[in-house]
Length: 136
Image (cartoon, rainbow, N blue to C red; front, side, top):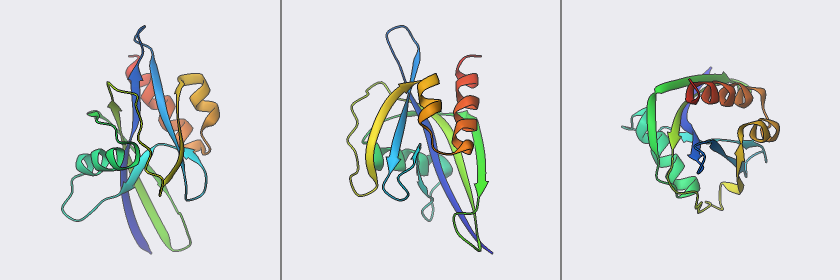
């Protein structure tokens, strides 16, 4: 069994009423709506990977909150187990510069709408956990 590890974050922006809007990206690979994430490169920490992937895929600068850390495990293909570690990250600027080779589209949505957009149940669970975390 091969093992892979990726890291990313649920990126949010607080609007003028301090209500979070969440960034969803549509991945070229599979066409699904999810969050920014990518493979850990040699020598990187989980946080460094998440920051790099967010920057590469969206051009956003974020502040990652390490007190939110969720892991989702799945099999992307036969014989492979993959862990994806997600943090929560705030950005002060909603201007996305999409990495066209990996991302076909991006959208900022309030919580309820973002839940409907997400393709996979694992991502819905992550967004629910992140939203609960932000509202505690």
